[in-house]
Image (cartoon, rainbow over all chains, first blue to last red; front, top):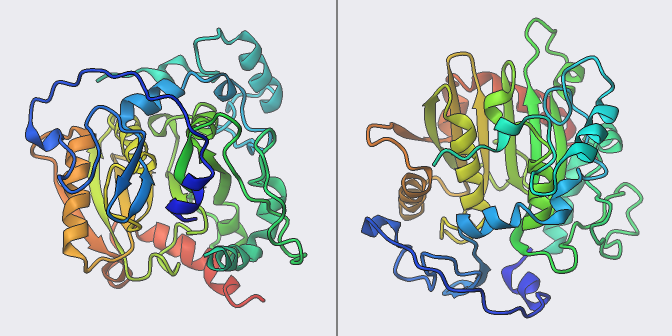
Length: 118
Length: 245
């Protein structure tokens, strides 16, 4: 995997909407020799070549993408890890969760799993 | 580049039976033409971002391991202790896995999640790790889920700014505490390890008195600490297999 390789295949996309970021401490700034911005540079050229950089906020926004609602087809069923520990058949349980999940919530057995306490 | 990548995968051939049940191949995710078509030993196809998905700088693989106390330490039982959960290439594919896995704080027993660049095994003997080390942060119970999420988001988003140095991250759920760590390639590169430490402080939002400890993997081998069993796990799992053609 090289940065150059993956980036050359990246389709162009619109410039992301700007948003304001309040810094309380200079430590929140990225190191000065990289051309990132604290608020969310998506694609950035660095001295070592182009690297794909995402900040936390942007990554969190992608969590609601429709594709994330269904588990990967080959997700191994590991009780207590990728499927419930309970007696019910794991695959059935997972499907039920998927069907019952509201659109804006990631499918998963445990709602508290997605609490953000920051 | 690809050759090295494939060679690492081929090392993996020993866990063939794992691959059968835990194949890292994805559905809806586009698969490149089989690069290694000629190699009958490898059934894996490259994982690539789907259309309109946001590519990551690297592909990553989730692993899960769990120690089963009291079992004999045969290679067979070790093999049951580590599982590849899957590989992803885009932000969306990451969430697809993550949203269908429990968070570390909800794991039971003596368990670990590992998230490593595809092709790097979460073991000290891997070429990418053998000269490396890791930052270790011990967390009181209740913090692991949030810290792990912040750690892996920073890693996937290339927030560490240390070039190719990052290998992967681990969260270890233990009896009285949880441990998160991030592994890098070159333990002797102090500029890199210092930058990783500073980034950890920034992205994890740790209390000021949190102790961060850097351990080279060779030190860990000489003086196995509380993560010793993990070391033994991987040693037993992989070492006998490295010579398998």
